[in-house]
Length: 139
Image 1 (tube, rainbow, N blue to C red):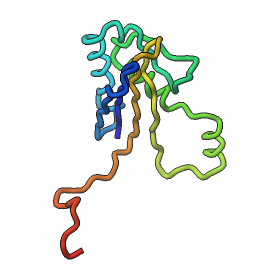
Image 2 (cartoon, one colour):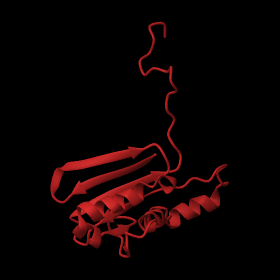
Image 3 (cartoon, rainbow, N blue to C red):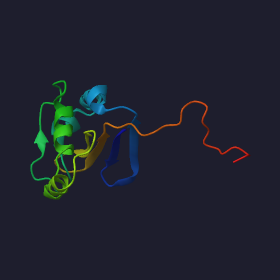
């Protein structure tokens, strides 16, 4: 499940989230986000950088018009794991299945606009048709 959220400047009540029930690396959502920013907010798109976290001192800037460029930066920055994670990983048996997950920030130089992209290649469990969120009377 992937989430793209936004917080704009000092306006606390202007925020939104888009949830996609698919892996962003195969969906094209990030490329469409780059195209939308370029068309609707070219100044923001020109100043856009990708960060691993708020205090990241090495943000990635790029030509976000290039297909896949923004996605590559998001997956790289968002998938970065620190020393503690690597130590825990080394001290425990590997998981049965690999899993790509993480979070990256897309921000402007002055940090007035921040888009938060969370990604997880696992899609959460969803009820199948015929299941109901309301318990039946005989439960």
